[in-house]
Image (cartoon, rainbow, N blue to C red; front, side, top):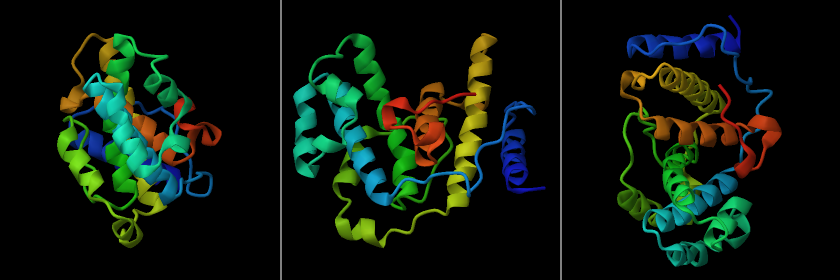
Length: 213
């Protein structure tokens, strides 16, 4: 088997072990040669933006984001959607909920930056207060000394979350709970982050990255 097939088989083995269904005909993702991986600087800026915005969204207090934005000088790193949200141009209940969930995308990003070695199974939500404390403790020296996962490891996780997301969506279509204790919101946000990490959708910007299944 080639790289793609080996990666898919590893994902299927893990899904089988957890009793999660999978679809044989689901396409295989990019190879290491095809993927366009984000730089560590881009990853760090992105998870800091996500922290600033999700923290403000959860507390329903948009000015709270300015603390992190000013601390890390994030103005130019915010996505257009994030900018509009913080300017009050997108602030109905659904927007606050959606941006609150964005904190879950931080987990694969700090893992990809080599700052956390545990990309735990997406069956639980994170403690944002603890994560905020952790991220505020990340110094330039820690970033420079971090050992990032290999491209193959990142693609393994991107392939796995892709297949987990299919299983979650299929269970929703069938009116059933998500299999394996998966948390649908966590799965979706991780899929978005991992697709961004590997340059999915022709290296699309953050707001435009798809999570097709």
